[in-house]
Length: 517
Image (spheres, rainbow, N blue to C red):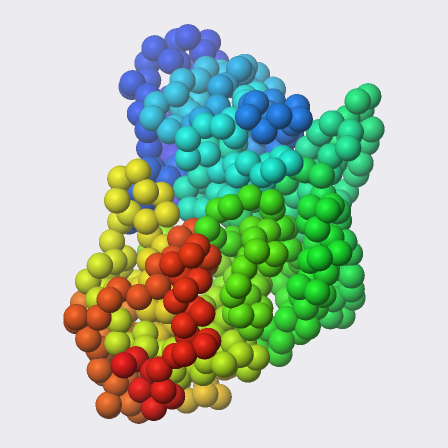
């Protein structure tokens, strides 16, 4: 971005010396802003790049009561700022400081508009401290209330309903969490433990991430939890957080994780973070979620489900695969979600093929049958329709799961297996700890294939109708087909209707010659 003009620099110098009341009087009326994401245009804010978040939360032992919180944001200005917006809602703000000086603030929509006492120059660093509450009982909060406490589920647009932030995956940052909870409760968060300090009747637990993270992947959990540790591949610390009473019963599932990590590493390279594990929450959500380094699972998936073991295993691999696809390599816009969910579904499918009873070919032929219906309902994979008002999970449609895995299946048929597998490794290696767009993926695929694949991707990613499947001219899309399995949140719905679908798939599915019949 170009440096401010001489006129803007002169104006900025005047603003720096002006009192806050004068600055506020000369600025236009505060407005909610966004960076123009095609699906969530209100999310994100221009003018700065967040470097880090330091989030301090005090939990009072009642998951219906607001937490006291202090969020400190360190950022670099990408413009001259005499005012800027943060995404924040569902909490009360008591005070805002910018670089140690009190700032003006007002709420507009789901934005917190901050007016510092003096301007922040282009390229300048700013430290923004917001004292606020975080309300787990508020509607559409990013908090999930469990039987014994709380956990976070911020995808896609709910992180700012927990803490002030630049709530868009394109602005990744480093995170530190300091969580104070009453004695008898355990607090955990993304990353590795950095400190634990007794504070009278409570304890403060500090965690730090070693890699940048999108706000939607933040995780804090408080409850009567057991923290179980085991070694993973090449000494990776694996940490699981489960209800104390379920530690023994869950062990047969938890001990699968190191081998699943090794399985993924064989296909896409070294695990990208400092730790991994499962957070098993005693609650019912209908989804699982790939929060960074500590994936969220509902307890009932393991303890109350009649789903086949191979299917539950594949769901575990789905969330694990997201650590590479979606977490380490994050979408630049939410329209790039197909890259995250399509790849996670792809490895879920391959794992199920190796360990279960449903081949990738069978699943993809069935997906091909439904694909035109999915595209009509939700848009093509890389140009999805916006969510309906009031339905924040509305972008998580079948077209971004099996419909996008179908794109990858077609790409493997088009490129050949060896080139496709090279693409997977180079994609996760080249864009590690960064954000990337659909265009980055299609260009890399063409480079590796040694030919221009733009026509292939135009049809498969943006077409209203599903193109012919390379190598399978007999596969047919059926416009009269039912829309297929529903999904919510991040992965498959685990409610009764979908469980029945999976039970039928395992016990009485169609013949291998025509599974889509």
